[in-house]
Length: 231
Ligand SMILES: Nc1ncnc2c1ncn2[C@@H]1O[C@H](COP(=O)(O)OP(=O)(O)OP(=O)(O)O)[C@@H](O)[C@H]1O
Image (cartoon, rainbow, N blue to C red; front, side):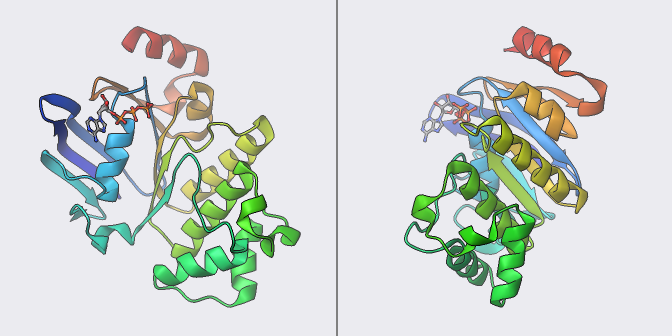
């Protein structure tokens, strides 16, 4: 589970995140919408411990995130806009390496099976990442999340720049992770995808979470209207 309690981040006098209260339970996919600079990445970075909170708390499985500490990060998988892995290593080698960093050791069949579950063709398992498309990299990123057995998955605009088919495949994978009981927080600019993928949707403006909605309570057209009225 992922929780923010009165979480704020200031850069000198600038308020990047203002008193965020948020809970993403197991099996929930929370999509954060908001204009550039609304505070989405700041929120994700606070949960990752990449930056320290000015006040309030970020909790992962009820443990407070400490900036720079690996204690809570081991429960998290992070999928940024472009999954940065080792280009000279194969998909299998990358997965093996990142699983080991998280304390897991798998045989080749198991590693291959994680990649296949994420829709990566077997012929690609043994190819270096340098030749992978963005969509293929995102699949390896999800495979790492599976292999790490991460309870929490944080995603920052993971479908930006993906073609419709790759977006659709990615969406199905993320929904399956939700059904497996992961807590997922995803920052996105894609309103249609947020309704399609999310169980919950938040709209941020100038560091504040203004609206929180259940995805079943709104369609894409109404969400777009509300979004435009809010920002
Ligand atoms: N290291 C930093 N130093 C100063 N200000 C920062 C820093 N990081 C972020 N900010 C500011 O905090 C605010 C929130 O930024 P953030 O990156 O969280 O927005 P965002 O919603 O993720 O935007 P985008 O959609 O463009 O990724 C912005 O005004 C940004 O300029």
